[in-house]
Image (cartoon, rainbow, N blue to C red; front, side, top):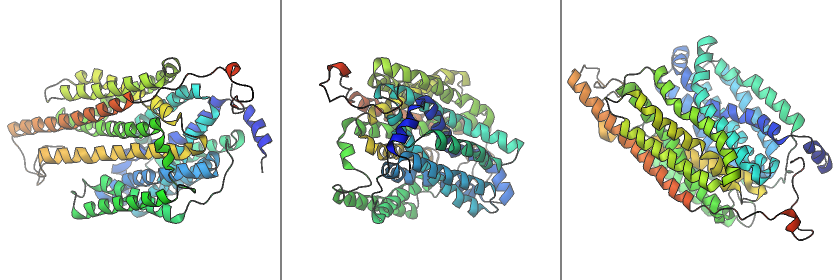
Length: 507
């Protein structure tokens, strides 16, 4: 076993940015696989003679498993070491990816996509505690900016990379491509990156784990499948059961606070951490809630092809990638609170302007500026959000803190999907094909009727985007309450013997 002295000696030779790049390879893969499957849906249906429901579950199984296990995964990183948990998650993710590519039936692919999601959830929360260990606090903003840029790139690259691989090599290669990247990442992390914290090997409590997974899983299932199942009694029963199990879980955790809880309630006594979770809900709501209405508007109202609609929407994540890199440097000079407020306001205003412009007779070019403004908003939001939220979190709890905020953000996105479905259903009714504007029975409509339908659809889309704008505005109000960091005390001004030790290898 490596001694602490050996670990420090190895860490001393590691450039923090190089270490972060190694870790981000794995995180990039897991985020890419959230969206990459969408490009393969027609091929999957053809290969397996699968139903639409089965194809949807190939997409949903990953999201459900990923969102349901993030908190548990973050806690595992705190207890057993983030590097070890990261490598285990990477192994699970890559192994499941290879088996996904070898699937011979839809049910096999669905099960393996869920396993993939668990592997991804083990990887992602470990990035934040590793950043807080590798970098001094004044560099967190730049590091989070870098990871925010990669996250935006993964969202953008998923459908594009998937389309290229499906067209050029077949759908199975959207999974096989993870093998060489995963092996490279595993080898680099094993060779160059020691675990910044030793494992503590404390018990989790299987009962608590099952309660949490059942509670979050029930809520996530209802939000993912609610609209497709027309919010039937079964969906509401699953949602109620999930909420009840989660309430029991919280009661159980309250009893365990003096021991080793899965979720330390002390985290929520940290003002900025609690505010970050509230903001994360609104950000997740805004990001996910923006793309579906935009896609519907561009394809169903403006009549663009899927590829052209994708190019228009790409303005937002492309600008976000550029802005995220800039925001990290601005945080160091102006502080995260101002950048966070600016980001939330730009994001909200951008979607509001899109809602204002999204009329049936508008030009697509009128959306470019608002989408770019929304992209600046997202790019200026993620880095300061994590920088502010994790600043006061004890290092030994940064894993569960990261898992919590990622879970909350995922739930915000799922809530947005459910909300948009309800808005469209209320405004359009259930007898319409949204893609064509014709009755679901397949009958034709007159041009005047189609024009009226497009007016109604555009109105529903504007309503959806206005809801996103208002939710993000509420997030901006939460950002106003963020507490700025106290001025740093120069080392020479501290009393002798009270200087805080810095992690080895940090320049």
